[in-house]
Structures are given as C-alpha cells and as structure tokens.
Image 1: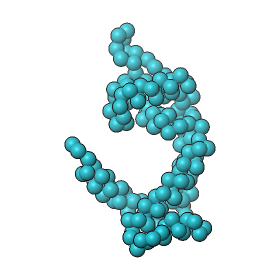
Image 2: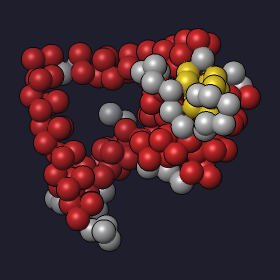
Image 3: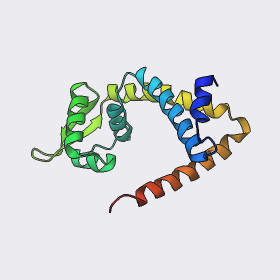
Image 4: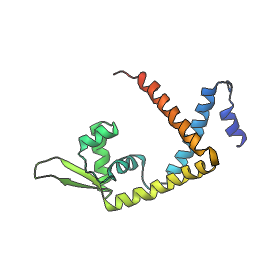
Length: 156
C-alpha cells in the first residue's frame, strides 16, 4: 500500500470504522473503474447481457422491471445494444411486443468481459487463502445489513 492509499484509509477520523470502510470501498471503486475502462462492453451492455444470457427472451417492460430502471432508459439501452449486434429482437405472433435475447456474438463478448472481471475477483480471493470462505460469509452478512438499512431509508 503506498502513502496515498494509506492516507485514504487513515484520514482524519481514522478511528471511525465506517470512515475507514468507506475509504476501502473508494479504493475498490477506483480499481473497478480502471478494469472497466479496459472492457469492450459498457456497464449498460454488461447489465443487459447479464440478464439476457440466461436464454429467456424478455420484453422491454420485463427488462425494466428486472433491472429496476425506467422503461425509457431500457428502451434506449436495448435499442443501442440491438443496433450494435449484441441483442436480437423477435416477436411472438404478428402483433405481440418485441422480445429481446442476447445474440451469439453478444453472449460471446459478454463472457469475455465477464471473465476479465472475474479473474480480478478470483485473484483477490485467492490472496486470502484459508480466510476466503470466512471473508465471503462476512461480506454477504455485511451487504445484507447494508441493503436493509439503505432500503429502510427509502420511501415505500
């Protein structure tokens, strides 16, 4: 860890564990952004393909609901991904809504990008050795508690 990284983790108020954790998450976000810059697919395309590589075609409404995004946002992202050849569009019958699926090329590109991302996670987990399972268990507990708190602050 270099001096700048130590400062971000041990900034004023370093006795505050929440502040220390926020600094660690910021470092993680920086590394994830760096990795994302090397990817051939953007975040929106990765999100769509993550959903659609299960082989289940979906309508714009279904995609919107499953990704918790506005339908206008999904419409724009899906159409751009389809134009780029990442998605295919089909219709059940002549008047039914369009349903979207990952194209063969889109699925292949998704897997390449996902493998690059997961290799970083695997390497970091591997560095934990015997503590890997404990870390994953604690992280799952932490994320659950964080989500419950964050969602508790949202209006119903």
